[in-house]
Length: 145
Image (cartoon, rainbow, N blue to C red; front, side, top):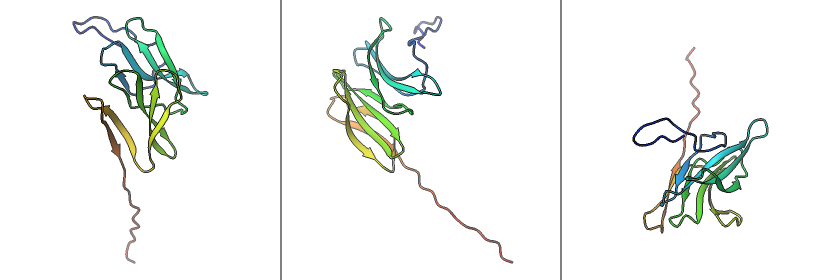
């Protein structure tokens, strides 16, 4: 949904079902990228969607290859590609999807960490990846007889 800054009624931004994943706006404010649920349960289908904000129409749709959907998405500075994260059973992986419809390229995999967020530096030369890991122990406590 979006709401005018001066107030008013909220209006839908997308016709796709909400998936609750991440999103990003291109620097010029014309494009929105997000994960959209295009087919509900039981046959979930999540796609990476690039939408023109003025018309509300999708510009590109990319199969995300995973039912969990990307939750972190970031445009490159020139808005010609998207960085996104796939959460899979073998660990989280970082991908780059060109908007020219070529195949997505896997950039990194983190077997033990989750990728929580990604951001491109202002000069477009660096990518910040926020990773998270969870440590846990199993402890057996016994009472004395």
